Picture 1 (tube, one colour):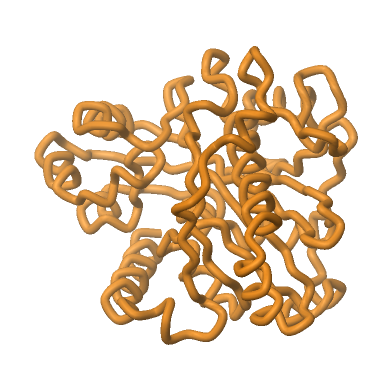
Picture 2 (picture 1 turned 90 degrees about the vertical axis):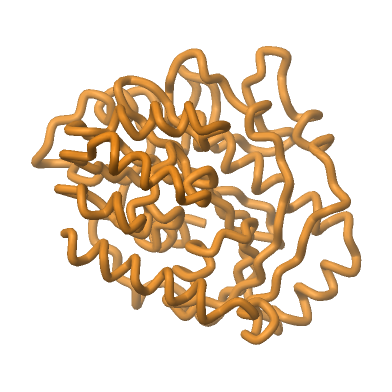
Length: 317
């Protein structure tokens, strides 16, 4: 496993070094920065209790007790008991069926899709590029702290709500910006346009870890991982641009970390990019990856975009 992480680390670091002009030199992978939008669209669709919901749409994610259509991929559904997963499936997945065997040939040719990635994350762009998918990367600004409830420490609902909020913000941006819309149609070349956004939270010691806001928080996160296991919950929301149909899913991975002492943590903290990672968990960090014992699940999910989950969601969109 450590060799796999190291290989991903080398490839990602090479990607960062060799592709500084990536967005201007590679077809379809241009960046569009959202500097003119605020969170009004999201705020208008937020209830007083701060639970996010869909405005004038069929809900994919509803409050507990209501029908919920969030696809959940557990890292090991049959061989490893997980009370958190069991509780989630009981409360949220009563009407959702997972296809255990994806027949990629049954999907529409992936070359027929054009993805609008609501992120400028290097790792997400890298994963799409390595998967030979056509996409346009757009930066969206959204205050994640205003979305969802954190009191219940429910990582599934939180990451789903944030992901959906990003998707609706992206859809609103495109609808309002005729120049952006024209650019998208020109790049898509009559391909099916799919909006793609994601979010990730880390769950450890019955607490949700988001991006650290300061060094102390990052330090506390990292110390809590030592000789422990943490869960990565990476959500994806897809929106069909034409029909505005929304599907959302969550991919779970489990990371076991060992012998990561204070000196190692100090070295990790020198990497400023950890502040852009949920839970300050950057598994490709040259110091951290040496102390990861086991990863159960999809490594690309921990990087922020599970291709496995993406394929599943496309089959039900």
